[in-house]
Image (tube, rainbow, N blue to C red; front, top):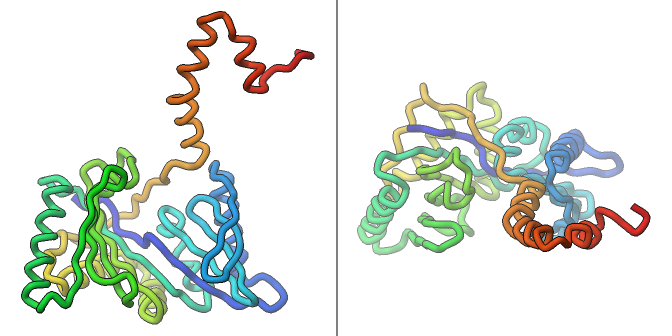
Amino acid sequence: MVHDVACDYLTSLSTEVSTPSEHHKLATVLFRTERDFGNDVRPWGMSGFKGWSSGHVQLGKRDELFMCRLSGVAAARSWKTMVQLAEKVTRIDVQATIAPVCGPTQRIDFHRDEALRFCKEHDDIPIARWIQDNRCGYTLYLGSRESNVFGRIYDKHAREHLDHYKGCVRYEVQFNSRLANSVAPVLARLPSPRPAMAGYVSSFLEARGVTPPGLETTELTLCVPRSRTDADRKLAWLSSSVRPSVLSLIAMGRGEEVFRALGLIDDNS
């Protein structure tokens, strides 16, 4: 079953001499939306750009260049307008997410075997590597991160821990540099770009000996849930780590001291 097909990541640039560009203005609106959803605002920088990060949006400036990075739900919903307003795109990721009958681990194992056979048949010139750990689960990487196109297949629920993605495998293709700047405008001009995104994913996998998932165009949807915000994570931490101690102290008759320690009451209350 196809869960969603969408843009998952976008890095875009514009030049500004004296006033913010339309690209910058939209990026600011998206940034404020992330903040208003409950995400912290933090200093951010990369490659000489300095600015701010909140949730799925990062903004930065370097001399006369303005950069915006979108990921996750922000990229899925706003990538097209950002591409149309930007002067240049340096990275765009397209993804397809499915729920295989066999489950994520078995499916990724199957693709790993396919990729290794392909590498062997081509004198081990193509790169295939994989990693499994207790934090991000199982991921298969295809190609080099430094190349113009790079792919990964992974257990989406193990990364996001969202019920929406239980049992799902994510297929992502990352276009960089000049290729990204070519692919992004082509997709942005399409009235319905998701079938084309599915085609890019399938073509990339086939070119590396990996069987693409069934991505029938009639089933393609945009159903990308918002990941937990910083506020959600703080509340979860309070519930799991602080609440037991608070309840224990209250049971000992020290509730007033608890509230004072938390700064909820003072000597004048």
